[in-house]
View 1 (tube, rainbow, N blue to C red):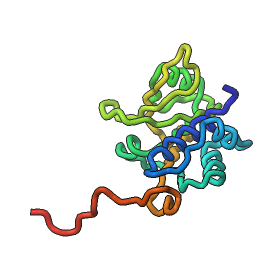
View 2: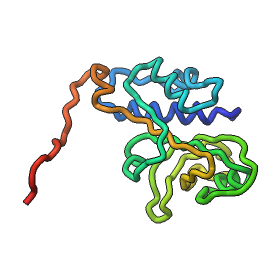
View 3: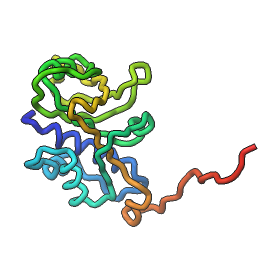
Length: 179
């Protein structure tokens, strides 16, 4: 409520990413993060930067237009959606699969939870209108709608020294010839 889906979604993506790090010493609460994530720009990207500046877990984020099915299922992805009244009605019904003409207003942020291969679209969590709307919606990313995707992730080098256990990869890179 009150136009804070940017902060809500950023906190969820940030905490989900922390939970993927092996050997984290401490995980902040949602409430701790939410207080930090609210910002005047109403930007999830800015919220993520504020969270990382405060907690320093090694979490990285970037705007991207190239999200693979694997990315949608393994890292946190935030969809920033701007559309018109018809588009919002479609989101409320559980499907936002095509470009919609109309006067764009309001920006909404949603956490990508996976990918529907049959519909060739992302599956997003809806954080508003849960009483008469769908809690999830199918979403096709379309550049014409002035939308963006934010990848939230960590790398082995970004978390060095921030965990209580030494990272040891469970797979090794194969270099050679397979017969």
